[in-house]
Image (cartoon, rainbow, N blue to C red; front, top):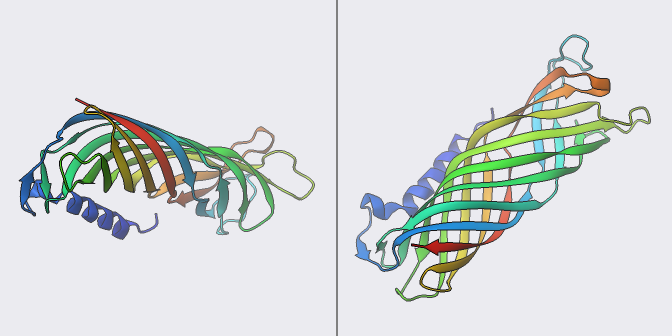
Amino acid sequence: MRSTFKTAIFTAALLSFASGAQAGIFDKTPADGSGVYVSGFVGGAFPFDADFEGTQQPAAGVPGAAGANADVGANLDSDVYYGAAVGGRLPFKFLNVFQPRLELEISHFESDVDGGNFNGGNQTFSGQQSQTFYLINSYNDIRWKDNQRVVPYIGGGIGLGVVDSDIQYFPNNGVATAPTFAAQGQDTGFATVSAAGVTLNATEKFDVFVEGRYFKTYGIDAERRFIANGNDGFNADLDDDPDGLTLTVGTRVKF
């Protein structure tokens, strides 16, 4: 796996800072608007290109050269991103501005493959990759008065990302007309998100919000497999850290 501990530690530190009031790091002041809520959101996911890397170790009878690179790059289309969360806003602020919220979230998107290359070559690509997140989120609403209707916020989350890849391709050499190799597999890795948004307090019980995110999942494994003519032979272990952006609109119902 690639070394990703520095990024993970940095994200965790940001989350700790965002929730500093809970640890007593900052002086706390009482605040209105606390309570439990449920939320749902939908929008667009804009994943960056997949960049699987590995070294070929082909099984007997499988094409490939042992020790050669096995770098599979795939262009991923944007797709619908949706999810739901249950959370709560805490009854205090720190620095007299930041009011914390905590959430448990599940979210998902699935992207089609639109082009790519193997080891920088010329191939035809197809397939898809889906990502599902299970997150613990920490936000801070920026509230300079209790009856504020438009509330910006910042925060992020940590948790698990489940990535399911089925990326297929064949060389444009005039011989193959159907997929000959694939990068396939489902794996779970440590996931982080960084987020910022704006909430409109539409009513006492109902919010509307817009949010943008950067997401990343670390150490996702797949296999390069030879699939021509019904074969299913191992060629190489692959590794990637998929990331990208999302933009969503959602609602919260407060209790």
